[in-house]
Image 1 (tube, rainbow, N blue to C red):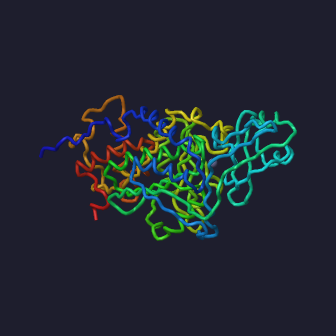
Image 2: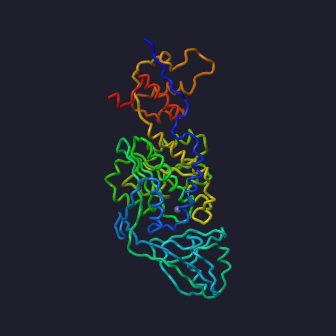
Image 3: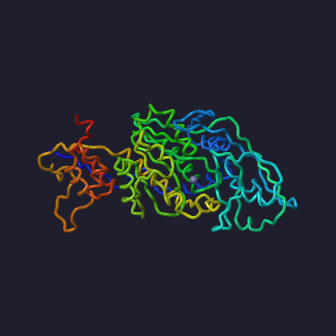
Length: 448
Ligand code: ZN
């Protein structure tokens, strides 16, 4: 009997492995178009942003009326801002919203009056430790008004009467969010969520918005095993709004990630799901190990972004968060210094590549059964083992085949085998394809 050689060329393994660094420039350019838009948790800025995203993926816009109850929360009134300034006693503009939308506290109620400096100071936010930066401040659920300015400018204010003007509206309207659904072979879903409520801030979190947009535009061209759901929502209230309207769909969510802070030049950080040992937790950890790049893994905590809602005890979804430097752990966070210069094209491209690697692993992970449970099958006659002993020892490919044969009892997936063997997932996956091709192993699905 003649056996075919079942070797598969060991090159171009991952669909995402070709160099994609040029994408970093394109991602950064797209970010620069989103950057000037004045966004908040509601309002026209969100709709303008979603309209730009819609040019790149099939996205559905949802509007939820102000006053709608979502669990213990209520959708707030819609906020829009058209202009704002402060004029000094001589009538000169010393603060102008047109120069930076960070100058106005988010959700400021309208105001137009003349007030003494002492009163103005109560409504001005600064960062004395970073005198050149404008802080990002919001007051969504307590009505107030405020300005934000560099401390060095604030220090120069002299006594006198100032004119303050905020042309905003806070009125019944709706909360807007965007949803892109890419159907796969199964209805089981991967949830990828990011928040778009921050105004002109780069890493937190336009980097997340841009990464998910590019990811969706890549995945929409692929044949997928899982269905993918991309959420572009205002933080917290948007996650609650989506969850409250989609409770029936939640059992379909098998894996999920919250995308945030993916454009700074720090190393990758993975924040585990509340479950701590979900498949997504193991896959992301293995992807990071295989990448050869520095990384850190942190346990779940009920602080942070929308994983707080997705992982609340009543849902406990398998949702982690893959980021670079975590929010709050870089000085530029929530200030005007988190700008387009702070976000690096190479970091955006690297983060996208790593998300694509996670998706490749999710798509390819499965459990097999070794059809030769008693003793090893003879691999050499199938072209899958060297015919002569060499002093160099086993190759990763040979090792991968042996590990798969030993652990393919139906209970271990390829990710499990790659974790236990310490071999790269790509080696394990390719070796499994060879062994399946040689009719030595079968997927559980085919076996039963
Ligand atoms: Zn933030």
